[in-house]
Length: 302
Image (tube, rainbow, N blue to C red; front, side, top):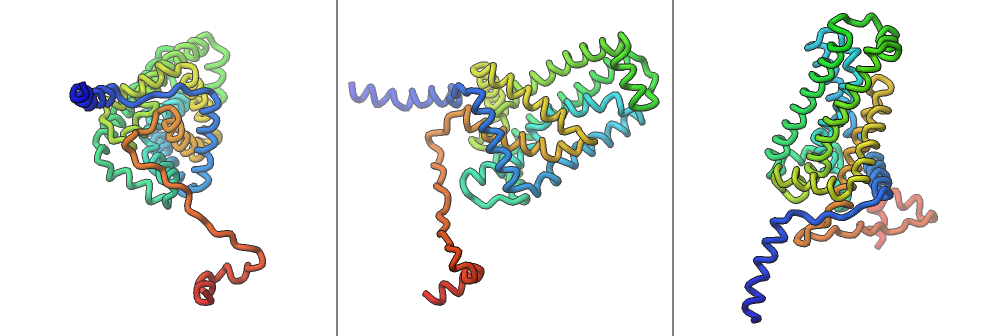
């Protein structure tokens, strides 16, 4: 009997491993805590925001300007909403920084590039390509919806565009159909990428396993994940003011918060090394203030 039991242990372990990571049930308070921790990470390492999170929104606008001519105005809202689709991939470096701070390691802007050395970066790139294709499809769909409502006639300015959208039946139809279609795209992106990239970075999971795990997370926590999607949408909308510059703060905040949300919703791998305690920092009394500026003097005196 003992031999039979011992023989079943590896089989049970393999079965548990095949079932995928263990998922917790989270509450709305966990979302608040994840955002709080994400804000702390952003304040600790703010320099990377310009490198990772300002360039690609600007490039997106430039690309749209080149491809669509000068009629970018009707696509400003779809572009801003579309950042939610590619944001999880764009925040790869932010996950790395949050992971380093979690382990009480040094985290600088350059450390974000360490994600490129991940053995599963190819899988991340593949899923990122899928999200990029989803983003391009959404922008093209939004353009088609606008053309169906108003034709190919361009707008003369912001006031003209606002008047068309808010005071005509075509504009109301555009709002309803556009927002409904955008919701479906956002839902698809949330379901397949809620925790996919942090999981691939942390546990070296494959793209398919990561997407399945994200689907399981959303299925087990429908209300909190729906609230998370709403938070992301609202913050991204606020980040577009003014002229998309707010995204330089919103996107890193959401990126760091996504890592902490992943930590809350996914049970830690039993085989992972424990997180070390924070390093001890000796107290420096105010009376020793001049000497504290020259620590080598203290060592010499000792």
